[in-house]
Length: 123
Image (cartoon, rainbow, N blue to C red; front, side, top):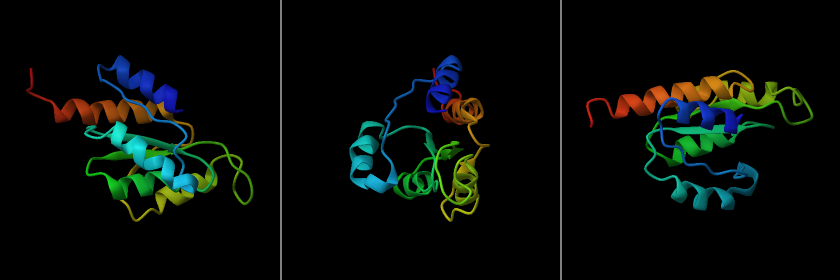
């Protein structure tokens, strides 16, 4: 899903910087990744299992977070098809936009529209 979002955003004319495997369970991995993408117009955050990462990222950045991209990974209660991640993201107290399970295309397109809107009128 993350790669799909990246490709769509690039095809829509955006410069994309990526960071992978920065889950909330190993939050120490998140901080170097956020420094790497600092200054982005919008953040796309894909997460499986309990879907915590988008809410954590939204609490640490001052730009829109599209991520709600629940992915169909995980196990346990409501786990294997992404429902647990989706439910968590929909109930987040952080301000995030949530797309459907495995909807990398939608997340990338929405993020690109936000980023392009941030630069309207710039040449």
